[in-house]
View 1 (cartoon, one colour):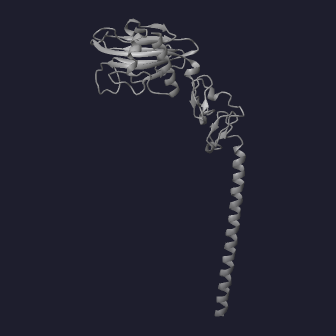
View 2: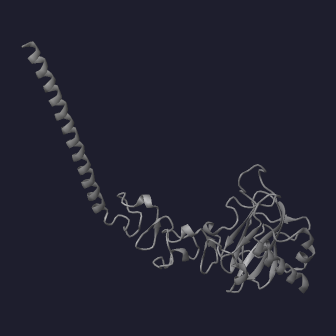
View 3: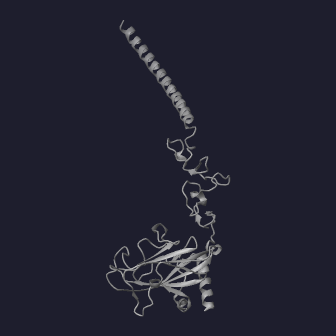
Length: 298
């Protein structure tokens, strides 16, 4: 038993490092059966604390019958310095329309944290249902909690099965990333594009890419650096609109416009003088020609 648990934790840790799409193979079914587990239909609105792994299922009935009219949520929590990884290993739920784009009934949803707010959904918003595993089967929390919700129809008895393995992983392993050429978020450990740093919009969950934007070591490559440290496109400087939150991209632009006006006036004056000289020269030539013709007739 203990050997199986540690084997699963090792596989999970390696999968996080390799950023793989799946954690468990079919050969792990024996170990999965030996893990502790809970039946969601018997643990509605409950919180379960773990420091290893457990399997969440939807029915222990021999005919895989899921109770009707379920709107059941279970929250899994772990130590504050750990994160959770939920891996969908087996799925089979009835759906009303196999061609439907969304799972309207008998759907499973996985959320980040201890609530089922749609803004914190880790799985796809259309839900998980049917007999086909989604493209993404690994769901990683940003903190120490994950909430799993099951909804079933009230019209009829349904059948289905589920094996969702939730494993607690140390944060330093969970957030291990190689951000070569990118910006590494301070506490969440995410990697974001370096050009998103100090752009006025948080790219990191902890918003660390927008902190300390006045530091000298943050530069805006091929971009304009606002006084606040924000980076904007150079084409937005002196265009009459504030791209910088502090308005520094429009400061001093009247002088630039005044200088440009003086240059344009100077060019216009030179063109006028040239045109005047040309006009005088053409006039003189015409006058000389007319005078010569007049003398011939006299």
